[in-house]
Image 1 (cartoon, protein in one colour):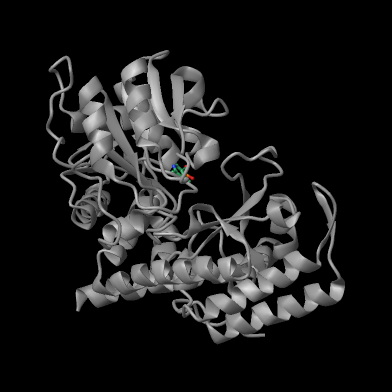
Image 2 (cartoon, protein in one colour):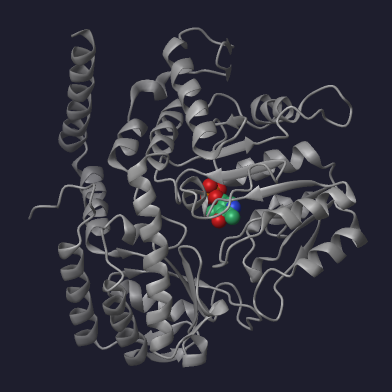
Length: 453
Ligand SMILES: *Cc1c(COP(=O)(O)O)cnc(C)c1O
């Protein structure tokens, strides 16, 4: 039983590590403990977050972190990488399996880095990039001036049509007018299904590469609930911590174009990405994070995750309906994924005041700009909610009515004193908070042991 003994040694290592932290750094331990309790007692509805599986979090704490392993499996620049190679190979195989990809790079540190790698692989500085505008639901890394993507490259943006859907006519017109080297699709605050094929058709018409950034919907894609871009886009990027319930990190994948030659004929698209991740952008990868990715990728490929992914969407639809039943304007009038964007300014409240007042009560959402928003990003007219963190609590669609009742109570009782100032009755705050805590007790995080007082 050699294997069991190894497992026991490792389990003892983890226990010892937690004990040492507790005994030798009580100050830090107390903060970490408070954060664990906070997560257990609040409704985490930030659409760009989730609650990682504890087995993925455990990988992050492993001694794999100690190994410096520049290079790739079988071709390292350091010795001592036998097991590191096994872990990375496993993560690559699991990524390919989960998404039906032919190539995966699991070393990239975040989705931001993943997008940068693809951009610097496919574009020269100053060359045109076509991505979705931030205000319409695109991401900072898709050409915003606040990001390197909008400073190094000449970014052009598309937005939404009159139905608040991605304006494919604008994508086609802008692509033909500007002839970008890269088109980016994928969003951060868009609640509707994305049709990948027309993006590829347009990219082919103008000779551009297509990057699909599925960071927000990667879990739904892995579960087959949202169509996959893997064989439509030349490159597909995601992070592993939003909807893949794994460790914090990034992933770059390629489907059928994996062995397509680069324009100079010297490399394939896969080899080009490998070289850009290391050594162009990064040195030695974080192999504990790679192990955590492997764990999360196995989880999202499992039959049990299909039910979680379906619940993400069922809860989100119920959430959108509950808001609309209360008279709120939900952007696009509903949702196909985990995201619900609500206009709170039509109720006289700024997004930032709504966010802060809800947080006071244990409901964690984020301020978000809405189409045509007149308020700056630090204020906004909307809030964005997501159901990744609720699905892992075994919430039922019926529970969404209660959640929206609580949100409505906060928003209707808060007194707005300025765009960024408000007052909330302490009685309301206390009673909503205790109602939230009661929900959290009734629907505990299914994978976490309940905290004991
Ligand atoms: C969150 C997000 C990113 C950035 O992810 P990080 O891993 O935090 O860098 C990139 N693209 C989209 C669409 C996102 O939503």
